[in-house]
Image 1 (cartoon, rainbow, N blue to C red):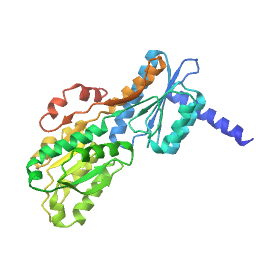
Image 2 (spheres, rainbow, N blue to C red):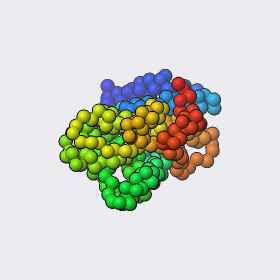
Image 3 (cartoon, rainbow, N blue to C red):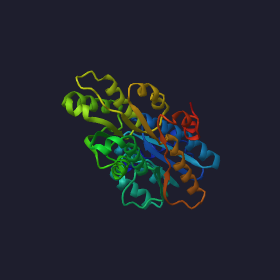
Image 4 (cartoon, helix red, strand yellow):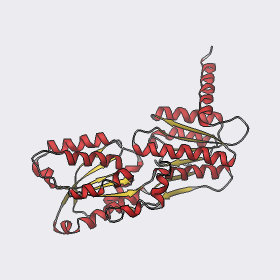
Length: 335
């Protein structure tokens, strides 16, 4: 059996398995394919739940077929793209593992004439149909302004030392960091920054290492932590709470993104410990809006450009009100 025949058989079998798993039917109807990373942290897990539900519901309500695919890494995601292109789907919603590393594979979707909606992580210098993502740069800018106001008196007197904890090397943390340092006062000093890969455990270990290996003077100088993710915040707060070294910790503010209920429920407890928390709303449910754009494409509607989902500040002053609002309610509509 030739290599070409074997390859075609593999593609057919893989496509068939995807069809049964994702709801694809060979009945001549249009098909939307939603492709995203598997859950390696809580935000992605929630996103998958919302995306899978919305893909099935929206496609079936409109009379379309659907494929819903998750992957553990870029190689697997690239293979999934090859498969849906070979199947000739009519629209793709893609959440890349890392946009630029998946650029060549995403280009095959465009080259095949299939409308492509990119979600969350950008692919630079790329001609997709449309993009939808959280307003990450604004999240960074608003974080910088919040830090400025919070430390207004200290900044007027001199330098304020802080740490930064990023998610990964994709466009998301780059935009958040760029936004923060655009608006943050020049008297903020970033003593160190870390890439956590969105991992609570990694962040906790990184901060514990800093606290236990740095000088007492340096540890005591840290007043704030600019952090890009709620899961990471759990690790940072655990490291601060569990510290038993010789330094007196002076961290007063820890930021986060996404505003999950588990973090909001910690606000009062950490406030009593002298640590304020501020987070910026970034709901896992917003992936549904990207799928809605894909459905709009199938229905012949004009879809193009960048679509940014607004954010809001959630701190000790308004978190209870936020938990009664529409963004929070939609996020936990499955629970």
